Picture 1: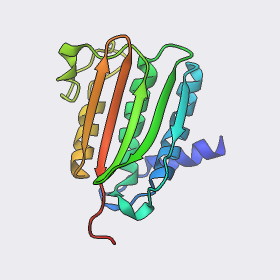
Picture 2 (picture 1 turned 180 degrees about the vertical axis):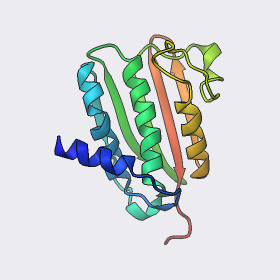
Picture 3 (picture 1 turned 90 degrees about the horizontal axis):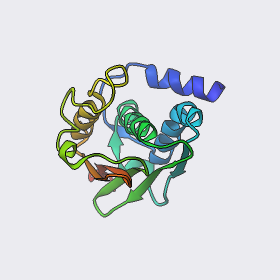
Amino acid sequence: IAAITAGLLQFSREEPFELRPVNIPDLLEQAADLVRVPFSARNVDLVVDVGSGVLEAEVLGSTNHLLQVLINILLNANDASQMGARVELRCVPGPTGVELVIRDHGQGIAPEHLGKIFDPFFTTKDVDKGTGLGLAISHGIIERHRGRIEVESELGRGTTFRVLLPFDRKRP
Protein backbone atom coordinates (compact mmCIF):
# COMPACT_ATOMS: atom_id res chain seq x y z
CA ILE A 1 0.00 0.00 0.00
CA ALA A 2 2.84 2.38 0.86
CA ALA A 3 4.52 1.76 -2.51
CA ILE A 4 1.27 2.38 -4.40
CA THR A 5 0.60 5.57 -2.42
CA ALA A 6 4.15 6.83 -3.04
CA GLY A 7 3.79 6.07 -6.75
CA LEU A 8 0.46 7.90 -6.96
CA LEU A 9 1.88 10.92 -5.17
CA GLN A 10 4.86 11.04 -7.52
CA PHE A 11 2.61 10.59 -10.57
CA SER A 12 0.21 13.32 -9.40
CA ARG A 13 2.92 15.97 -9.06
CA GLU A 14 2.56 18.52 -11.77
CA GLU A 15 5.86 18.82 -13.56
CA PRO A 16 6.75 20.84 -16.62
CA PHE A 17 7.44 18.88 -19.76
CA GLU A 18 11.18 18.48 -19.64
CA LEU A 19 13.22 15.77 -21.32
CA ARG A 20 15.63 14.03 -18.96
CA PRO A 21 17.28 10.60 -18.94
CA VAL A 22 14.61 7.98 -18.25
CA ASN A 23 15.24 4.71 -16.48
CA ILE A 24 13.04 2.52 -18.69
CA PRO A 25 12.95 -0.54 -16.38
CA ASP A 26 11.88 1.69 -13.48
CA LEU A 27 9.26 3.36 -15.70
CA LEU A 28 7.71 0.00 -16.60
CA GLU A 29 7.72 -1.16 -12.98
CA GLN A 30 6.09 2.11 -11.83
CA ALA A 31 3.38 1.83 -14.48
CA ALA A 32 2.70 -1.78 -13.49
CA ASP A 33 2.50 -0.84 -9.80
CA LEU A 34 0.02 1.96 -10.52
CA VAL A 35 -2.39 -0.32 -12.41
CA ARG A 36 -2.03 -3.39 -10.22
CA VAL A 37 -5.29 -2.79 -8.30
CA PRO A 38 -7.61 -2.53 -11.33
CA PHE A 39 -5.88 -5.52 -12.92
CA SER A 40 -6.31 -7.56 -9.73
CA ALA A 41 -9.95 -6.51 -9.46
CA ARG A 42 -10.65 -8.05 -12.88
CA ASN A 43 -8.31 -11.00 -12.30
CA VAL A 44 -6.19 -9.97 -15.31
CA ASP A 45 -2.54 -10.97 -15.08
CA LEU A 46 -0.02 -8.24 -15.96
CA VAL A 47 3.32 -9.68 -17.04
CA VAL A 48 6.21 -7.19 -17.12
CA ASP A 49 9.48 -7.84 -18.96
CA VAL A 50 11.86 -4.90 -18.57
CA GLY A 51 14.26 -6.34 -21.13
CA SER A 52 18.00 -6.08 -20.95
CA GLY A 53 20.57 -3.70 -22.34
CA VAL A 54 18.51 -0.54 -21.85
CA LEU A 55 20.59 2.08 -20.10
CA GLU A 56 19.05 5.02 -18.28
CA ALA A 57 20.87 7.60 -20.40
CA GLU A 58 19.77 6.15 -23.74
CA VAL A 59 16.28 7.70 -23.79
CA LEU A 60 15.27 11.23 -22.89
CA GLY A 61 11.74 11.78 -21.69
CA SER A 62 9.34 13.16 -19.14
CA THR A 63 8.76 10.30 -16.73
CA ASN A 64 5.34 11.46 -15.52
CA HIS A 65 4.11 12.05 -19.05
CA LEU A 66 5.37 8.65 -20.20
CA LEU A 67 3.68 7.08 -17.16
CA GLN A 68 0.43 8.74 -18.22
CA VAL A 69 0.73 7.11 -21.66
CA LEU A 70 1.55 3.65 -20.31
CA ILE A 71 -1.19 3.77 -17.68
CA ASN A 72 -3.78 4.81 -20.26
CA ILE A 73 -2.86 2.01 -22.67
CA LEU A 74 -2.62 -0.55 -19.85
CA LEU A 75 -6.05 0.39 -18.48
CA ASN A 76 -7.51 0.13 -21.99
CA ALA A 77 -5.92 -3.32 -22.30
CA ASN A 78 -7.40 -4.30 -18.95
CA ASP A 79 -10.86 -3.12 -20.07
CA ALA A 80 -10.56 -5.11 -23.31
CA SER A 81 -9.51 -8.31 -21.53
CA GLN A 82 -11.69 -11.08 -20.18
CA MET A 83 -11.34 -12.08 -16.54
CA GLY A 84 -8.35 -14.38 -16.16
CA ALA A 85 -6.64 -13.05 -19.28
CA ARG A 86 -3.07 -11.83 -19.58
CA VAL A 87 -1.61 -8.47 -20.63
CA GLU A 88 2.09 -8.11 -21.41
CA LEU A 89 4.23 -5.00 -20.94
CA ARG A 90 7.75 -5.28 -22.24
CA CYS A 91 10.71 -3.29 -23.47
CA VAL A 92 12.53 -4.14 -26.68
CA PRO A 93 15.70 -2.17 -27.49
CA GLY A 94 16.15 -1.56 -31.19
CA PRO A 95 18.80 0.01 -33.40
CA THR A 96 17.38 3.54 -33.18
CA GLY A 97 15.43 3.51 -29.94
CA VAL A 98 13.37 1.68 -27.38
CA GLU A 99 10.07 0.00 -28.13
CA LEU A 100 7.59 -0.30 -25.26
CA VAL A 101 5.10 -3.02 -26.15
CA ILE A 102 1.68 -3.49 -24.53
CA ARG A 103 -0.18 -6.57 -25.76
CA ASP A 104 -3.57 -7.80 -24.68
CA HIS A 105 -5.42 -10.91 -25.75
CA GLY A 106 -8.82 -9.24 -25.61
CA GLN A 107 -11.58 -8.47 -28.03
CA GLY A 108 -9.48 -6.43 -30.46
CA ILE A 109 -10.38 -3.24 -32.30
CA ALA A 110 -12.71 -3.33 -35.30
CA PRO A 111 -10.90 -2.43 -38.56
CA GLU A 112 -13.28 0.48 -39.18
CA HIS A 113 -12.31 1.98 -35.79
CA LEU A 114 -8.56 1.47 -36.03
CA GLY A 115 -7.93 4.67 -38.00
CA LYS A 116 -9.92 6.75 -35.51
CA ILE A 117 -8.56 5.62 -32.13
CA PHE A 118 -6.19 8.59 -31.79
CA ASP A 119 -8.92 11.13 -32.70
CA PRO A 120 -10.05 13.29 -29.78
CA PHE A 121 -13.38 12.16 -28.29
CA PHE A 122 -13.51 8.92 -30.30
CA THR A 123 -14.47 6.03 -28.05
CA THR A 124 -16.17 2.70 -28.34
CA LYS A 125 -16.78 2.57 -24.58
CA ASP A 126 -20.08 3.31 -22.89
CA VAL A 127 -20.79 6.96 -22.10
CA ASP A 128 -19.90 6.57 -18.43
CA LYS A 129 -16.72 4.55 -19.12
CA GLY A 130 -14.53 6.77 -21.29
CA THR A 131 -14.13 10.20 -22.84
CA GLY A 132 -12.14 9.28 -25.92
CA LEU A 133 -9.28 11.55 -24.87
CA GLY A 134 -6.77 9.05 -23.46
CA LEU A 135 -5.24 7.86 -26.71
CA ALA A 136 -5.40 11.32 -28.30
CA ILE A 137 -3.46 12.79 -25.38
CA SER A 138 -1.06 9.82 -25.37
CA HIS A 139 -0.38 10.32 -29.07
CA GLY A 140 0.45 13.98 -28.47
CA ILE A 141 2.75 13.17 -25.56
CA ILE A 142 4.71 10.64 -27.61
CA GLU A 143 5.03 13.08 -30.52
CA ARG A 144 6.55 15.61 -28.07
CA HIS A 145 9.10 12.89 -27.24
CA ARG A 146 9.98 12.66 -30.97
CA GLY A 147 8.49 9.16 -30.95
CA ARG A 148 5.43 7.43 -32.30
CA ILE A 149 2.70 4.99 -31.33
CA GLU A 150 1.80 2.08 -33.56
CA VAL A 151 -1.12 -0.28 -33.12
CA GLU A 152 -2.03 -3.68 -34.53
CA SER A 153 -5.29 -5.41 -33.73
CA GLU A 154 -7.27 -8.42 -34.74
CA LEU A 155 -10.87 -8.94 -33.69
CA GLY A 156 -11.19 -11.68 -31.14
CA ARG A 157 -7.40 -12.05 -30.78
CA GLY A 158 -6.25 -8.83 -29.13
CA THR A 159 -4.33 -5.63 -29.64
CA THR A 160 -0.69 -4.63 -29.52
CA PHE A 161 0.46 -1.06 -28.94
CA ARG A 162 4.07 -0.12 -29.63
CA VAL A 163 5.42 3.09 -28.15
CA LEU A 164 8.66 3.90 -29.96
CA LEU A 165 11.05 6.32 -28.26
CA PRO A 166 14.28 7.39 -29.99
CA PHE A 167 17.66 7.04 -28.35
CA ASP A 168 19.33 10.27 -27.28
CA ARG A 169 21.99 10.60 -29.94
CA LYS A 170 23.82 13.41 -28.08
CA ARG A 171 25.08 10.96 -25.49
CA PRO A 172 27.99 8.59 -26.08
